[in-house]
Structure formats: structure tokens, C-alpha cells
Amino acid sequence: HKYFCEKAGKELPPPKPNPVLVAFGNVTPSRYVLDVIRKVRSMCWASTAPPSSSSNGRSRAKRT
Image 1 (tube, one colour):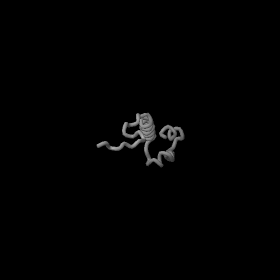
Image 2 (spheres, rainbow, N blue to C red; image 1 turned 90 degrees about the horizontal axis):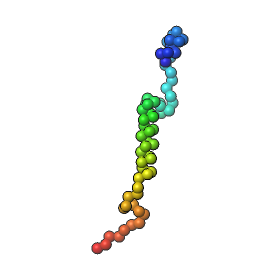
Image 3 (cartoon, rainbow, N blue to C red; image 1 turned 120 degrees about the vertical axis):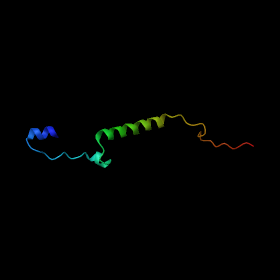
Image 4 (cartoon, rainbow, N blue to C red; image 1 turned 90 degrees about the vertical axis):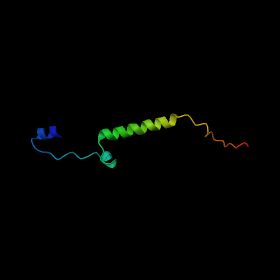
């Protein structure tokens, strides 16, 4: 913004914020990218986790 003001020789209005960043609560571009990377990483880890032994789809009856 500062460069364009100097080039124009006058004070220009500030640039309009990106609508995506406004929708996410006026976050900075770097914060938005970091949040997306965290979500992708957590989705990847969740999909590659081995199934637990207790959730094999069959119910076990207790033996007494």
C-alpha cells in the first residue's frame, strides 16, 4: 500500500479486505493458511489411524 501511495504521489484509500478472510473473522492471511494446514493434517492423521480393538463391529457378550 505504501509503495502505491508513493507512486501515485498522494494518500490512497486502504485496500479492501479479502472476503474469505473477513468471513473467517478478519484473520490475517498467514493465520488462515496455518489453520487450513492444521485442519488438513488432523484429517490425514484421523483417516490413517488404525481401528481400535474394541470397535470391530461385533458386540461381545460378557462371560461369567
